[in-house]
Amino acid sequence: MKYPLLLALTLFLNFHIAYGQSKYQNGYFIDNTNKKTECLIKNIDWIHNPEAFEYKLATEDKPKKLTVHDVKEFGIYNTAKFIRAENLPLEISAHTGFDLSDSSQFDFVENTVFLKYEVEGPASLLSHEDKEKVNFFYSKGNGSPKPLLYKPFYIRPKIIAKNEQYKEELTKELSCTTSTLNTSNMRYSRSSLTNYFLAYNACVSGNNTATKVYQNQSKFNITLKGGVGFATQTFLDIKHEFFVPQAGIEVEYIFPRLHKKFSVLVDPNFSMANDENKASDLLYATYKYKGLNVPVGGRYYYHINSASSLYTTAMFGIRFLAGTKRELHKKGYTSSSFTHTYDGNYQSSSFILSGGIGYRHGKRIRTEIKYTSDIDQQGGSPDAKKTISNQHRLQKIDLAIGYTIN
Image 1 (cartoon, rainbow, N blue to C red):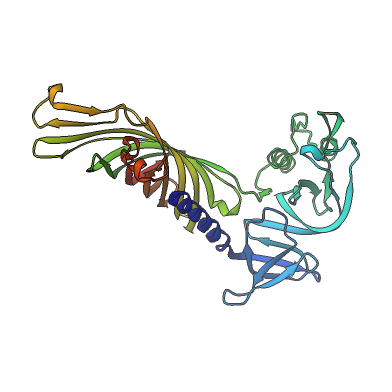
Image 2 (cartoon, helix red, strand yellow):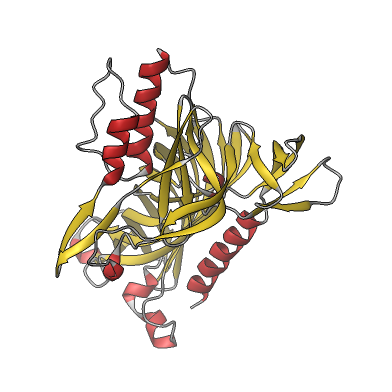
């Protein structure tokens, strides 16, 4: 029970730290009198469009709050930009699940909201996202935002059709004679619409420098890792302590939101070792270990600066034992008469928990230290601790160096 509790505590602390580390960054806001004020804005990497934000005029000042009714525009330089849209028609029909309607007609409510710039240029793509859905809008030059409308609906039970009016709007309003812009395979998604607006702006301006993109991108990391571990294992009251060389490959997905501080990963690694201990005046115990660990889990980054980060990792997985065995024998004798092997009396796999800390330097190099332990699968009772499977439980501290290849 103590291992799940430790894992839960680690994850809780990661989330607690994450939400406590939103920082103030250089930005600005434009108030209702069109006055622009340079300031520091608290960047919480908004998942949903904000209705308000906190700012400071200087680092030592107390934070103040402004709402959508106080400012026309605000932004964090090179990161995010929002503008106010008054009495904006927001389409509120469901896009997923059992809440789809059986009508193709759009359903609107008017509201005053902040719209987020996704792409800014000759034609700009904007969005409004709440906990229910995301709506996209566009504007040309200094024009007001106009909706890009999309609605899936049922035409029969379990048969879904789509009202894709946004494709007609883009074809009509954002076409370029020297480009083969095509909406036929377009999806109503941030990535698909962004590609269309980038292509259109490049066509009408003749270059890509006239366009800004305000989007966080997800990222896959593939990291080759090697290192050495110090392991302990007790069997038949004989304790083995030995070093374990290991190698592996880690595949990590870093989420684009929350300042790219969270990721999920799989970290398979293989290790092997031999150890011999004296069991009595006549007998010696040999432990031969070969193991493939396949843990999956989560990671939280604390970004020190743009070039380096600290991180913590918590994982759960399976250890596969291949060719692992334990022998009692007389020193100097190889005859089976003097050897007893315990190699089929324990499970060939076990569940493991792992946690560690690491340091990333630049885009390529990382070092980490990690603790891994088999889980007691029989409840930790006195009888269970005597079983061969539980006495093969391994505890290991690893030091590894990794190189990210992509």
